[in-house]
Image (cartoon, rainbow, N blue to C red; front, top):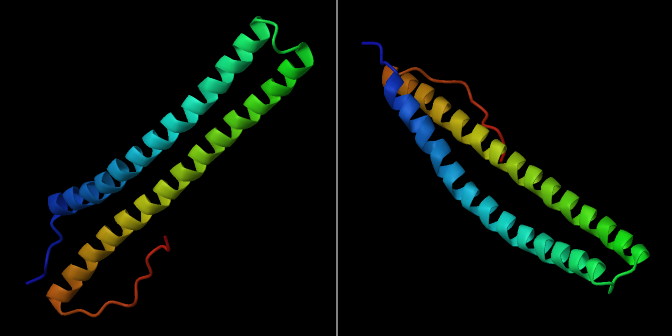
Length: 121
């Protein structure tokens, strides 16, 4: 008998592996985003109110805007880097699950597989 790979089971296993990563990483991204956005909002409030009330002159205001731009750019670049790590984790999880299904079918049939490399994460 030739072993089958359970199509629905494979899809379910892949989705489960992905969901585990996405749930964990989404929580990390949410916490990071909230903390950084609060910092950006506080600084925005200080700069805006300080300038509006005359505590910050135009030169200082422009310097603070540059600093604010840097903060925002770093925040978004860090989000992009964290998202890239999540994507790599997803690739490894899906590949591992799919390769595992292939290996299981091969073992059930008594067939040896060549070494299958998984992505490094």
